[in-house]
Amino acid sequence: MAPLRQGEIKSLFMGAPSTGVRAILFGILSIFLMTLDHRHHHLETLRGALSLVVYPLQQAVGIPTRLVGWASDEFTSRESLQEENRRLRQMQFLTTAHLQRLTVLEAENRRLRRLLGSADNLPEKTVIAEVVTVDADPYRHRIVLAKGTRAGVYVGQPLLDAQGVVGQVMHAGPISSTALLITDPSHALPIQVDRTGMRGLVLGTGRYGELELPYVPNNTDVREGDLLITSSLGGRFPRGYPVAVVDRVEPDPGRPFARILARPTAALDRIREVLLVDHRAAQHAPEPGMPDSLPLQPEPSTSDGPAATGAVQ
Amino acid sequence: MNVGHRSGTWVIVFTLVIGMMLCLVPIPEWADRLRPQWVSLVVLYWCMALPDRVGVGIAWLTGLLLDVARGTLLGQHALAMSLMALITLKSHQRVRVLPLWEQAVTVFLFLMVNQLAVHWVNGISGFPPTDWWYLAPPLSSTLLWPWVFVLLRDLRRRFRVT
Image (cartoon, rainbow over all chains, first blue to last red; front, side):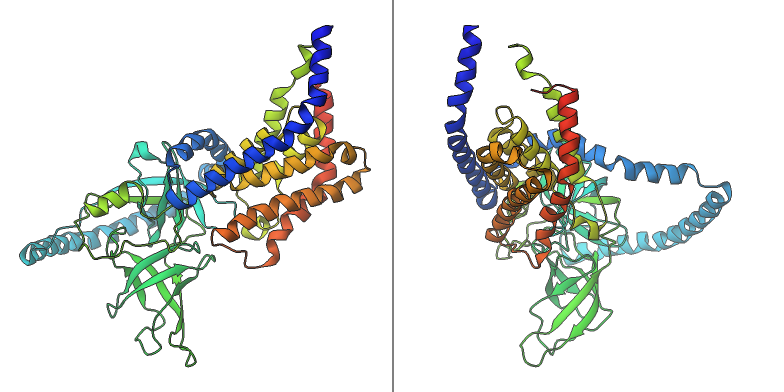
């Protein structure tokens, strides 16, 4: 009886005051963690370890969506399958035809580059990763991918889909990773207007389907329908992938810069799979004075990890 | 008696896991803004019902895992969650005996503290909220509180979680 009595008394008199103390300790610990995470990005290993705990949940949560996809694949009728097959075969035929021309062009391009003495940065390794979850926070555009460092994913790795640039990897855990979409408000991407070659940046706005082109003077030649491609300045994204199409140009005589909005070419709100491009191998040392790109905020995805070291070497 | 003192840990863990999953399930963008703070509701209930078992520590850990799952700053939800757990623990004896709707009003305040702390950190780190929608989740969670409360209470009684 005695030990029980003692335990009860303990919980009554020891429990109450220690709650406040513990709360203060945990509060300090959280602030410490947040500061480390925000300013110095030292917590990738901790995040990676904890992501192993959370990953099964993220997987489980995606099951219904995948089941629906699987069911619609499984129960499509024979005719529609045949129809799809026919269409795909046609497309394949066309693509192969295009590709033949492309191979020739690629070879020619490589030869010309060699003639010019510039580095050859065409071959790039790619990995396809499934999107596990889309971030639950409506203010941040992030996705979780089902591939991690074991599959060669690294922080800062560019993400593409069939239509264009999707984003870049922000945290890489062992078997999963988090990526920032180009529409996230903290994301900036160096681009070039395909038609004129003008360099610039596109910023995320926090809305799918809208990007902003800041600091473009009113009299610059940018028109609706212009294609924006990656400029590879900053050395994080490979050159020449489509990013967005200019949607609206509103010159504002009252201000030095026009208001330009663009629509991403990638279907950012509907992606299920993304292409991870290993850009490190293809990276030749950029000029030392070149600004290291991307996120405006000192957010987790800036100069840290293998991407930054790769760019320096 | 001593052995039975800590029974039903798995029920607590299970409900926390379910709450976490409900926080991560992909839903359309318009519904996302109204998504209730499921994990916070579960943590709140256990803090109120079993304050000697679920306290600031478990709230903090849950928040940390939520941070990892959502890709927010490590410690952001952890701080908010432990703050909420603290005020719940300090007042659980008063809140527990209130009628359900009065309890819901109090719970609204607790959840509000949680949400404000999260967005306060967001604001400091450079992402101030652009509209008033961030006040919606505590409201939708409050509307759900009576059901969550009754459900978790029944679970606690059936599996004799003490």
